[in-house]
Length: 159
Image 1 (cartoon, rainbow, N blue to C red):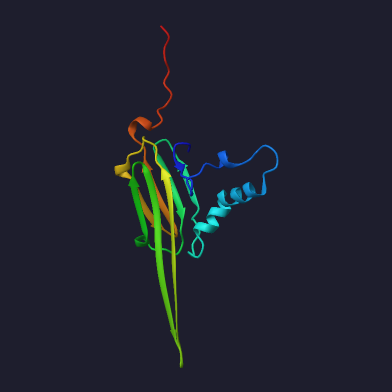
Image 2: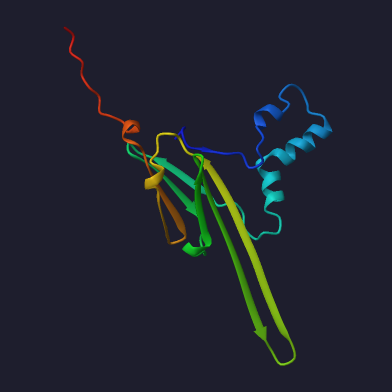
């Protein structure tokens, strides 16, 4: 699905930053480490309790389908928005546990969040996008406009 594009997490184009001729200098090696998926993933999700969820993107003749793996959440935890052909999927959860025993009280709380963004092609019906959360998978159905649907092959007669 070449039309649906994941935007870079830190807004940089890694292909322009990598030194592909010869060995990199130590400082460029450090810069490249933090510009990679591993570096930004570690920094942006430090202490949040949640990593970026895996996403499957499928396409058929009439639709795009996004499947986001986010187990253990409720549908009310999600926020889906479309702004200037950018689909943003975010979630935030807070939890509190309290255990009381004879002489003390212990409270544990946690916070987790993520945000994924996708650039939608001009050929989708943004008003008809639907989402459903079931069995830990957020399914997003994105229908294509009529002009973007693949038409069957047509035979042309030669006169």
